[in-house]
Structures are given as C-alpha cells and as structure tokens.
Image 1 (cartoon, rainbow, N blue to C red):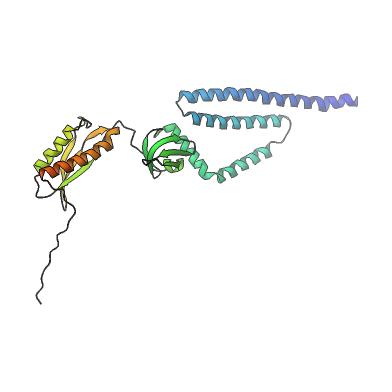
Image 2: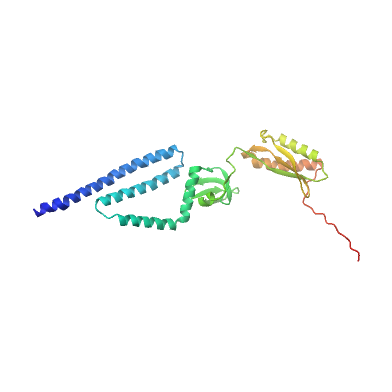
Length: 269
C-alpha cells in the first residue's frame, strides 16, 4: 500500500509534469521554427538586407527559446522568478558594458533598414569620404580615393550628416573664374559660353548658368554652373579649369591674384 501510495502521490504526478515539460519544450521548438520561418519570409518581402535578416532571426530565436525553457522549468515546479531576475540583471550588465557597441548596432540596423546609401556609393560621413565597400552590423567599410581601407563605426556615421554623392544621376559643377578689372567682360563671357557649349559631357538641361557674380577686391568673378552626369563631375571640372586658363591666355585676359595697393604719405619734417 505504501508503494502504491508513493506512486500515486509522487511518482505519477512527477512523471506527468516531466512529460508535460518535455512536450512544452518540443512543441515550443517546433513553433519557434515556424515563427522564424514566417519572420524571415516577411523580412525578405520587405527587401531587408540579408545580414540583418539573419541577425534578427538569431536574436528572435534565442529569446523565444529562452521563454520556452522557462515555461518547461516552471512546469517541473522550478522557481523561475530568480532565473528571470538573473537573466534581466545579466542583460543590463551586458548592455552597459557594450553601450558603444549597441549604439553602433542600432545605427547599423537603421542604415540597413532606411538605406541612406548602398555599396558602391561615394559618400562623406563620419569624417571620411570614400566609396562604400561593405555595410556591416557594427561598422561600414569604405575605400578612400587613394585606395585606403577605412572602417567607420556605424554610430559615427548615423549620428552626423551623410552626404551621398551617388544618390542622384546628375550633379551641378560649380566653378568660379576671375578676370581683371581692365579686361573685357563680354569677351570673357563669350569664351566661357563657347567652352561650355563645346563639351559634349555637359547636359543641355538644366541650362548651364554663366553669369557675372561678384565685383571682388582684386577680380571680376564669373560663376559657371553646368549640369553633368555624376560620373563626369571631376572630369568636367578639371578639364574646364585647364581650357579656361588656356583660352584666357590666348585672348589676353588676365586671371588676377589677390593684391593690395599700398599708399605712402610723405610727412614734412
């Protein structure tokens, strides 16, 4: 009788709890897999970056699995309140220790979600100018114009202004050319118009702006503002500087340098 009483009061209920806990764990694992699969499918439909999808899925899987384990242990009669408190305290400690890394991670998520730039774009961000080689969770890999590799923390990028030079198909080239006060401004303007019209890389629309912008201290300044395809920006600027200098020299138009007139007054003894 004692054995039957022991079995009925202790062994059978414990076996039922154990089986229930195992079922909770097994079924929970199956449900987690289905949830992760569904989340991945939804994230892929939103065109989210593959790296971010894998990272979010891993975090979600770990969190859900933790809840399943706690539920299974609770079914066995284990006091999980202290375990939850311990996990929360550990999470807080880790969060404080990795505050900078978490900031970079959050910024990386924002970059991957909102896409202010993509791989291959030429940007200026975080105090660095260069071509984006790779966007990672915590940092962005950039290549400078002189072929240096720079790793920039995502927090530095997202916390400041981001200039994306590749975001638009066309760009305006802003140039200023100064001539002397004694030179013929009509001739200088006609030369600038001729050089702009002869360059096939300069777009007809929007119409290039060529105007006398300033009567400066040492020169009369013209602004030349043509529109070009983004890939032709530097080529047009460098070529135009050379062509204008040669054309002005040939026409006898001076390009003055800053100067100061000094007047001496003789004082009687």
